[in-house]
Length: 68
Image (tube, rainbow, N blue to C red):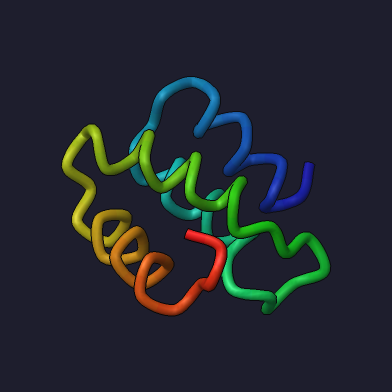
């Protein structure tokens, strides 16, 4: 099981840190799975548990992504 699969499993189980890191795998065009909408979904789930980095990423997406 690769690192992304581990993050996904933990994220789907409700782990806020895993939700943040799984969201990062979709964020900002750095990887072939680039999808800001999916990233935002995971960041929002994480931010509801007050995960600080997820809150930052939500703000960053709103500032820099033209489709928000």
